[in-house]
Length: 108
View 1 (tube, helix red, strand yellow):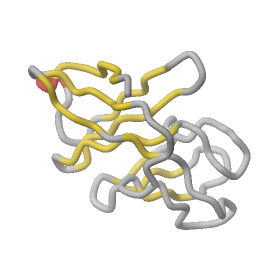
View 2 (cartoon, helix red, strand yellow):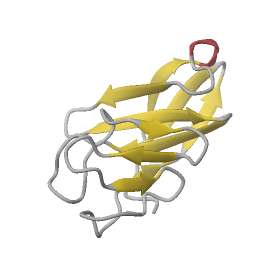
View 3 (cartoon, one colour):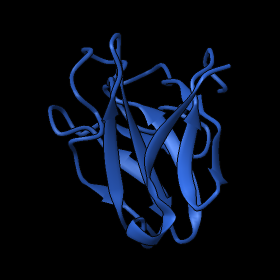
View 4 (cartoon, one colour):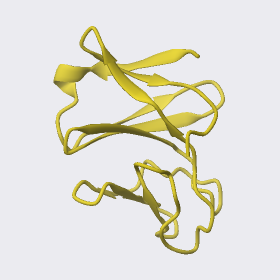
């Protein structure tokens, strides 16, 4: 499976997020208290941008900026309405000091 470079690990401190745009989609990559997590940048409620919203590092949850649906960054599961379906998550690794996302079908 292809891997996409996100940023050097040194530039990816706790509480940071970066959005990677691919030809067909965007992915938000989060450093949630040292856990590197990647989530599809698409709210399952209305297909709006999800990763441009606020997020809570303590609970590892992202909040859709349009209607406030909340998603778990570990699983992609929708936690609050109006979203009822989860979104895709992706494996994240660090190779040679670079944070990388493996682009595969939904891992959640």
